[in-house]
Length: 257
Image (cartoon, rainbow, N blue to C red):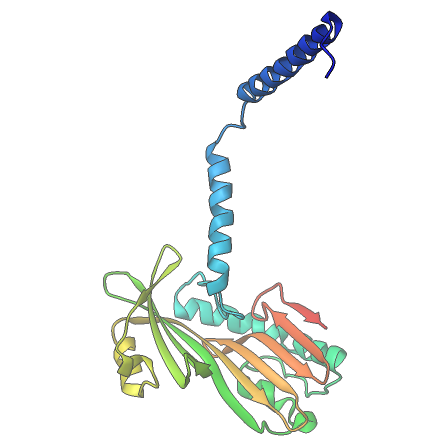
């Protein structure tokens, strides 16, 4: 091994000094860097992302009737929707003919826009339904103290390994639904008496129903009704579908796929 010369020792000192300076600068720079301030907006955004990710596994694959409607008195709501639905009924039948190539008999002026009249208009082209059932229903009532309640009856082929009808009861406060537990006897395949007992707790406000009808050539009609008046339609034929919403309003819209 050769002895170090003064020149080589000088080079080592210089390299060592450069390395120490580099380490000092690195730590000093990172220490002085300012992180973005955690504002209320930042916290809320992070919280919403966390909540959406944590709740996603519990959401059903398909949800029905997730929004609570703005409610008015039954008489005002019924007459207003009935008028618009009657006006729009022939426009709705035209959409069915255009999208699904299903003929129908036009409604006479003033004919009620209910399920019986709607299905009768397709009798010559589709015939009678081969199978039908009520998918779900919502019955709204108001208690004497002013509280709003909702009675929901669902028909399902399987819920938690069970099939049949399921009754649910909700209190509605500021547009938010609060579940009110029922006994197993009341909630699973309830009798008419159990449903009527809940209805008697308050005054009728509004009723919604979703009914499905199946025909011999695999056509399917899903009608949404409010107080007996058609407010929405889903109709399938072969590989095409038609969805119409706002049927009982001035802004009915239809989507053909």
